[in-house]
Image: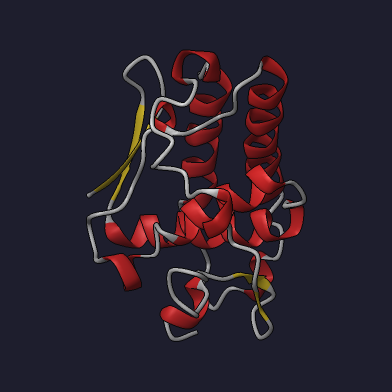
Length: 165
């Protein structure tokens, strides 16, 4: 099981298949919306949730362990970005490009969105700056075939290429 934690003891636990779906639909949205340096760092964190590369059952992260920024403005912008990614994913953005129907994805996204919405980044200010990839490891390269940000500099494929799509 893979777990994604929020504040106040909230968490989203998914089996390996559910986690793969969750990461796939988030990558479609994060790749569309990323514009700022923090956005690309968050995209890199999502690429590190690729079980084809990291191993099954060993991915997930805690919102409290992320570097949300140093100022209230930076933290608000980062949280807003994550919420916008989740909102775009909830519109089924580019899901027609998936080679499968993601039956539980909407439920996972709604649960995670509620966790992010309730989370206060100020409580975690730079708590785990090493969990969120640094600016030098931000996901800036794009997979031409799948039109999503890929795993560089960690590996040279996107989540869809590593899954053999």
